[in-house]
Amino acid sequence: MSSARVDYIAPWWTYWLHNFPHINLRFEPADHSFLPEDGNYQQSLMFLGCVAAAGLGLNLLCLAVYLSCLCCCRKDEDDESKKPGSCCVTWSAVAAGLLTCVAVGVGFYGNSETNDGVYQLTYSLYNANHTLGGVDSLVTGTMGNMKSALHQHLARLDEIFATRGDYVQTLQFMQQMADNVIKQLLGLPDWEEAKVDLATVADQTANIEYYRWLTYLLLLILDLIICLLACLGLAKQSRWLLTTMMVFGVLTLVLSWTSLGADLATAVGTSDFCVSPDKYIMSQTKGIIGADIVHYYLYCNQTLSNPFQQPLTIFQRSLTTMQIQIQGLLQFAVPLFPTAERDLLGIQHLLNSSEAGLHQLTALLDCRGLNKDYLDAMVGVCYDGVEGVLYLCLFSILAACAFTVMLCAIPRAWRQIASRERDYDDMDEEDPFNPRARRMGSQSAGRPNMHSFCSYSSSMGSQSSLQPPAPAVSNAPVSEYMNHTALFGGNPRYENVPLIGRGSPPPSVYTQQYRNRYSPTMRATYLSMTEQQSRHFGNDFQA
Image 1 (tube, helix red, strand yellow):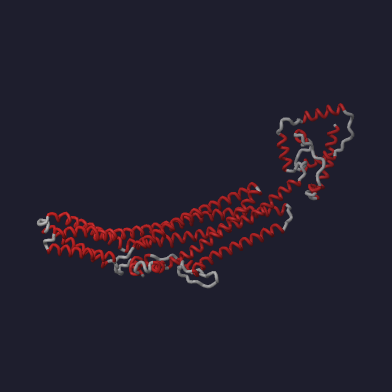
Image 2 (tube, one colour):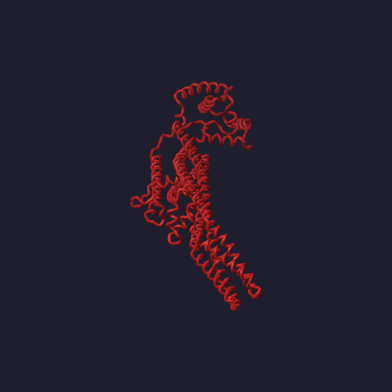
């Protein structure tokens, strides 16, 4: 056993996973040995899945509490409170995006490592199956030749040598040697059942691995697409896109916790097997193949004796004895019985082919071939396979964290978008400082059918010539507008020209909510500048 442990040493992470608590659904400790047929062991693996389900429930509960607090606790939506909230949403989106990218990268690596390990396992199983199939084919072919072809040749020679008693005794001795060879071949283990089992395990494992790899590939792509669309919804401030991504985020969160439970149970179960694989293999082959044969192939130590050495030696000696007898008959009996030459040459060819098959059988039954396949399978499962599953567990954890952050950020962004749209709806459409009015003014400035300043003033002049003189016009609205212009850095004498040219006369009255936006100092400055500008503008207007 010491040499076997040098060839195969289970990695440290398998021992770490093997030491995980094994508790059944009745909260009773279970055996850590790999016993997939045992009910308590199955429940201990299911318990790990239940732990992941409990984590999912706790995660959803925290999200529900957070959303409830976000909906119930309304904050004052002033300028000072909006800026920190916007930064919080931005940094949350950045953190969720980075976590998703890292999770997807880890997931791709883990999925590839797991696939490589399972592929190495199936490749080794197919190689071992081919070896056992070759052994079974050689044994069956040799036994068939000895029972049928050799028996026919000996029966015809017995008729030819009927008059020579010494030749007949030689033929009977050869028949005894052939029966001895058949007896030794029958003493070899029946590999047919083991060969079928390996082929079935390899086929089922390959099919399951294909669907597992494809499922994780789709899950990784889905996580990446949801993250990108959520970021696009935040950038475009699209509420319907954010709402859709929130629903898909919850679905992905459930899938992440589900995959975590499945991967954790798989990693622990596989590690239980990797810690002592020989024990499980010997228990499964009990009653099919002898324990000494299984031990010989699992450890392949030079100190262990080959259990097939004795039957193969007897096989070789029997063939050598039969070839010596055939050589003597060809030398002494053919000159007396020429018709016997054909059957003697047929027996010689059969013995030569049986000897070649014996050499192939000896090579196939050697422990080095099957032991190499066994070690390759263990390395594939316990090193690449379990390592890849651990990376997939890390991917599930990172993805759950990323989508939790995303689900916390999306409602806040949704509220900010709704609040901003509500502010736009509450603004006065005639307010020149309204961004929407500015956009409308800039769009109407480029229209070709608008009156210019000259046409507008000329038309006003023609109308005034036909109508009686108008009463004195108050300068309050104009002065108020001119004061706004001077307050924000405009020219009080010519600022009204582009407004008139655009067909947008100055507003006359401002709502109370926009008056409240200015501080007392600004309002005082506003009133003083209004008096000066109205007085100056009135003199220019009279002139």
